[in-house]
Amino acid sequence: MKFLAVHPSPLMYTKIFLRLEPLGLELVCETVRCRGHDVRLIDLQAEPLAALFRLFDDYAPDVVGFSLNYLANVPEVVDLAKALKQRQPGCFIFVGGHSASFIAHDLLNHGEGLIDCVIRGEGESGVTALFEALEEDRTAIAQIPGAVTLEGEGPPPRFVENLNDIGPARDLLRNRRKYFIGTLDPCASIEFSRGCPWDCSFCSAWTFYGRSYRVLETERVIEDLQRIREPGIFIVDDVAFIQDKHGFEIGEAIARHGIRKSYYLETRGDVLLRNKEVFRFWKQLGMEYMFLGVEAIDEEGLQKFRKRVSLGRNFEALAFARSLGITVAINIIADPDWDRDRFEVIRQWCMEIPEIVNISVNTPYPGTESWLTESRKLTTRDYRLFDIQHAVLPTRLPLPEFYAELVKTQQVLFKKHMGWAAVRDTLKILGGHLLHGQTNFLRSLWKFNSVFNPELQLADHRQPVKYEMSLPPAPSEERIRQKTLYVHRNLGRRGRSLDDASERFVDETRMSEAL
Image (tube, rainbow, N blue to C red; front, top):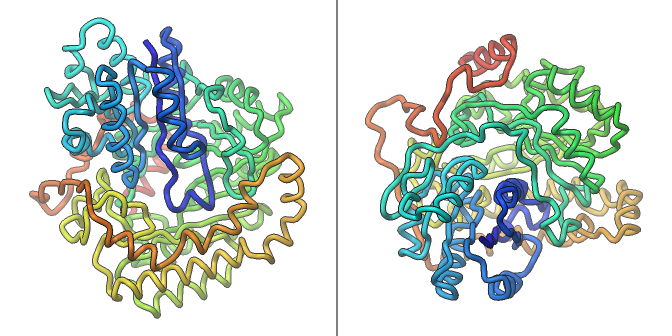
């Protein structure tokens, strides 16, 4: 069969600061290709919409699969699925991905019979069973683990049996030079581990994977790294190097093989402090960027998001990260309850520290505990506004003033790190980019005001709402039962590839209420 995989267009934030290769979709494509099918992949982050329709008409696929990791892409994906189905009614169309796994029934209802199936959970596992059913018995699709159709729903999705058995089909992307993050231009993506054992209330990584945590073998990681031509590498792990042994093993193998890359990774403050030597080692290997999800600069904020890393430990982690001599980026969650004074405090604090600061808006997403506790307060159910750059909960300030303060704060921080003073500091890097024909980072310097604009954000609220997400049932008890949130079944201790000391560390930090 002929399979066309489609990644939707970029979100507001990714139009400026990053554009990442669709690694998950590449893994799905390789899984399908290894079973003898013909595969094509198009990424609308890097190609125009017209290219999709040309490819679809010329290729005439038997199956189209849409990746849907972000809620804001729902209207686009639904409309594209309908359009392709109408062009070729015999084509089987399915949707998968992180967000799709939490809103499967809504997607089918929005599709009005033109979306054949939603695959929940890990796509590599789901597509294997799906293609077998498409070839042998289409009536069995509704019984596939993770499959949801208008006719029925299969059992819970299954994990990929062995992460080391699959690899990304990187050769299918036509515009690999389009992918970057910060000054890492161009940049490829890679995973060393999958899942998160913590349970922050605003996050759905742990609910998707059932609090599991699995790691790839060092040999498998090295094979992938050796095939990557890009000089920049974004490590997509939710929390990098939870246990030091894994980080050291991969790092030592990189050194033995003489692999020279520049790395960007994300981790937690308490993990960084626990495994300092690993991160020192990775600085020697080429780690240039580190992202820390600080989320709040006061104890009240940390408690609200159940981050379970104390304020003191977060600041200690920032100090250590600075000592490594790398570029550190942090995230602060802007609460809709903020007033002008609070925004000013945040601006002053952010200007006093050397870190790159990103401001995102507190947004309850399906799959998170905050979705169950906060969704009754929503002022909109328009998918397009669920991008952490729009306010979907009531704001203390009038909405125009909230956006004005938000964008003012973002502008101050942008000029601090991406303005002309920053350009002077990165002239050597920019010169290297231009010598190699890379302009992604340079172009981003001119885009901010055309993307981050209070009037544009307000106008988004005034747009007609074509598709609305359903609200969850009201919680029947005060404490949320976590197992009701899981996409993949929680396998408990056996689902986490952690040594006993790391498992105790996770439990101690996860259960700590003393913030």
